[in-house]
Amino acid sequence: MLETLAVILVILWVLGLVSSYTMGGLIHLLLVIAIVVILVRVIQGRRV
Image (tube, rainbow, N blue to C red; front, side, top):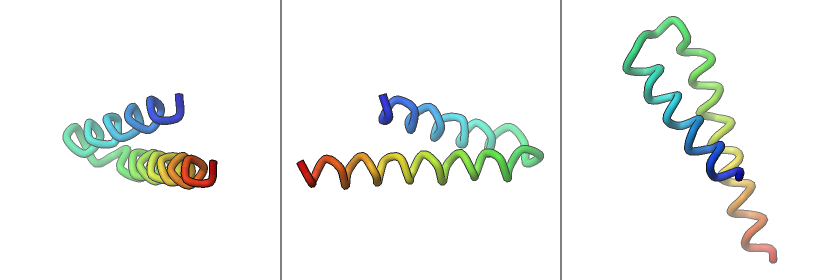
């Protein structure tokens, strides 16, 4: 589920870059959240 959410956030970020720069701050915040989620998932996967 976390990977799906991360993919959706990355897609929204790319669409934000293509469409306009007015929501740029929010879109980049979503990108940072997606990267953090992916990193947490990878770290948890290595521990088990």
